[in-house]
Length: 136
Image (cartoon, rainbow, N blue to C red; front, side, top):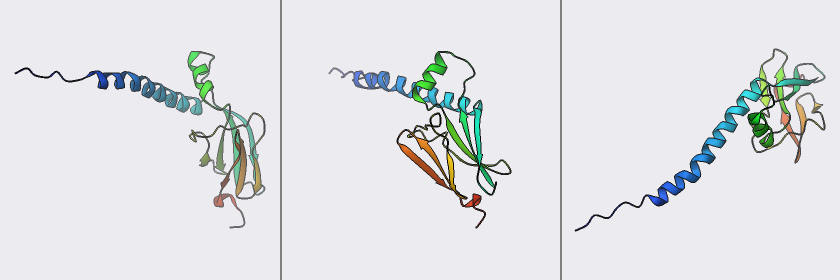
């Protein structure tokens, strides 16, 4: 009686196809973290009560290289962060991977004390921030 050899070809093929995609995604997420930590501040806009600000940043890897080209191919040229007056981070568009910010063409703006609107390539997104509303 002969033993049947295991069929490793489907598993090996799947691994060879999936592994590069997982490694590429992991590398991109690593670069996103580095670029966020090294982001350059472009503009700051305070709400009317000066309780909160929205800041526009340009993610930066610090040099023009293959890795920075790879990163900027898949990423927006700007990101937005909202801070309270003490500097605590309240919201960030940095890790919203499904949207692309369009801060290089239009600035974010406060439409009320506790609501800020920022541009994306699909239109506008907004954050409701009750902690920024002086009337609450």
